[in-house]
Amino acid sequence: MAVADKSIDPRLLKCAREEFLKKGFPKAELKVICENAGITTGAVYKRYKGKEDLFCATVAQIADMLTAFCDSRSSVDLKALTDEQLYDSWIMTYDTMIPIYKMVYPQRESFILLTQKSAGTRYEDFNHEFVNKMCCAYEQYYLETVRRGLAQEGLTREELHTLLSSFWTCICEPIVHDLGWDKVEEHCHVICRFFNWKDVIMLKKGNTDNV
Image 1 (cartoon, rainbow, N blue to C red):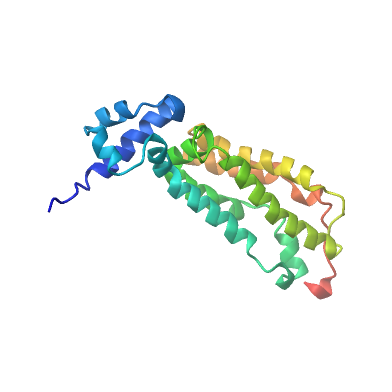
Image 2: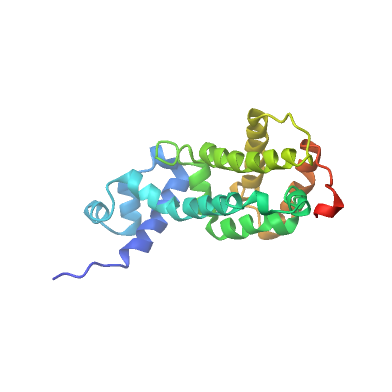
């Protein structure tokens, strides 16, 4: 019984990433990917259904990681938080922001493919869907903050979605433009100053007896 050549897979994915980064999904050529990887198209079809399936294989890991990251931030039992903890959750700091960059930076090529070059694949709406997930999470935090009298009521879901779309774009920028890690860290500090959620929701300290 023939043993599958496992050395093909990393070489194939590397060449696929390079071709997709250069041309985007629609214009990328499976033939070129195969030539660069030194394999036949038959070897590709033994592993993937076609070009889209191959593209998705290059971004699936980072997409899953981002989704899990968002889910972990939205699975908190908000009613169990003290007023102080809820207040602090709205204060952006380097320490709360840098984890997403530490996760994304080592996979920046796959991140760029996912967020910028996935048109025509099942991941083409990833940015919109991710912002929607963020919006659902932030809305729950906001409603709980308002319920406790720690924030001003009136921020609509539509406005929150608009702000979070801008927030997500801002997060993506240093990775999309291939900035070095030192610039990413600097950008992280700037984001924390620029997106002042405290003023957006008119956040105020709660009763000190409940913190």
